[in-house]
Image (cartoon, rainbow, N blue to C red):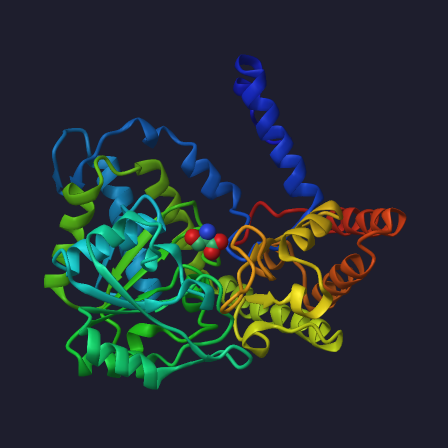
Length: 422
Ligand code: DSN
């Protein structure tokens, strides 16, 4: 157990929830592709006394006094983020990826303007304009999709047609459930053709980009990148906005975050972002990012060998979206539950043009960022994929499932969650 002495003494109920989660994480495998394990240094920064400080504004331009240390820590986070992503400007204050996207919209658009983004069931994210989100009350969202869900190829011709018709001010790339690389040059060309900003939400693949295992969209002409810091990037839960080179856009982004959308920045989280960015700048992070991809490929091979359909036909990044309903007749929700029962956590997920509902879709989504942090290589990842398929094929055999559970527990004991990475 980590150091929670004060909470334990003072608040048994909260302590017990934290202790339970610590045990759950230690004894199970985390395959949700947007989750990861942070270092102890990141957690110490998050838990630091910087949480006490109000620091509205930006370094050197704050509204309250006493900012010598908050300024220092925010400058460190900004400079490290810029270096990691080859950006001229960075805003590290967004509380989350959703806030980063909302601020980006308000910075670049006027109410009523149009955004062209990826359809949710084809891999896009809620904040890319799903009708249930409030942002759709301010801006108009139109969609592009995959041309072929079995190759993952985006329908760029249709995207251009929609762009010409709808005249978006932003062409938005990025996804939360898509397993292939996008053709960045095509996105930028379409944006240029219709006079839109080319923006990409890199939340899922930020660590792959930072570690050099995926292409940097700035090299292809994107103007802005939004992100979270807690997925493949392995930092604290939070948001990040990067601007390639336009001072004008950077100023608009800063204004949109504060005072436009948020109040006081979370200085303890910004300190943790600085620590995580420092870790990502270490050469060891490159090895980590490359291993994430190798591990995903090892899992892909097992699913392919078992003839389980993968959206996009497989993976080129850290995640796999498998059509377990189409291939095994097991709905996503049931598959999630069966795998949870053997200590493998992942999430049910809609697949392209899913005929089932979002609460019980056809697919499961899983990925390798967290198990790679745990030290798994291709061999262990292939084994885990075999256990997954085995559990699904024996979902009604309690004794078989409990045998798999025991094996997963043993694997977790052999690969404890590390506390340092550099
Ligand atoms: N909830 C995140 C994910 O799992 O992809 C995105 O916000």
